[in-house]
Length: 102
View (cartoon, rainbow, N blue to C red):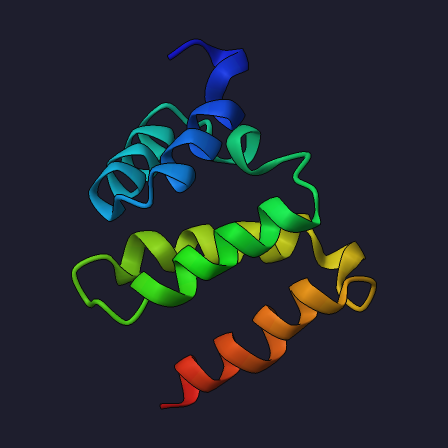
């Protein structure tokens, strides 16, 4: 995985719908200090797909530490678009909030 391929690798992992692939890639990206690069420059649909995965797997305590870091970085990076995308805001404010508060 070359540096310029981090974003594409994450897209491919999310598209695979295989949680082990995505989680392994997240661990590798953290190890390579490349999580910011992989999460950057995402459009609305890519952000929604990422949030779908995070909301789905975050309740699993085995992955919570890693995924909370991914959520934190994602929210920091995309704070400027909160309120501009109905699809992203729905994931963030409705589904993620419900999951955290359950």
